[in-house]
Image 1 (cartoon, helix red, strand yellow):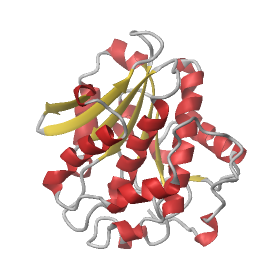
Image 2 (image 1 turned 90 degrees about the vertical axis):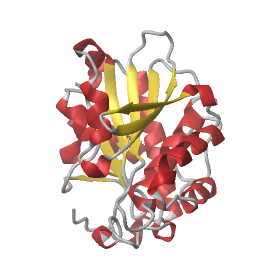
Image 3 (image 1 turned 180 degrees about the vertical axis):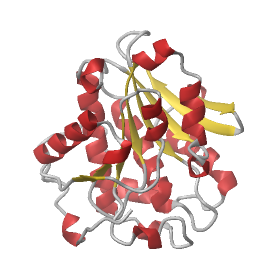
Length: 271
């Protein structure tokens, strides 16, 4: 993945025309969580659990699903009715052996947990399922395990999946080859309304949205990688000092607005 970007993404984060809900996280809060990215693989899943509890999730609401030698963690916010349609918001918590996986993908985990904190405070039409996927770096195993257990009726009940993967190096971007066109267009429209720099282009490789697309569920991957990202991710240099707080905050704000927009539309709008 080679992305031609510059430092012009440093925009004023207070200039957005779309306001967020009460409980909106600050740039500083997000940066503090990324600074605590656990470098040891064995600590990653427990750290995800701790972060969700810090964001207000009760211990009994946090579920760990172990299947096919992979563990996914999920937290669910019910919608208007028990049978309401679902939106999945996901990020993988695993990393490759070198480095601390701060960009790829503790940044996504931090955004995921802070989205939970904001969204639990407002009414929702649809059920929101926040998922931290395991073993993405080993063939998307966590997301594959999740979608393979869905029945056809459950697939139809999933309106969209928003995947958060690697932030901190640029403005928000949609990976077009890993995303449903309608969701990419929605992201572009919202970014324009928010006066936020944004782009869409294909990337090399895959991410957890791919597993949902293969089951016919509308999905997208949102990221904020930048020029020479391959010198950072999957290397010993992937540490918290590589994550630019403003980039992280832009990704959080756009992802939050995306979820709210998807929640307000009929499920079929994205198919």
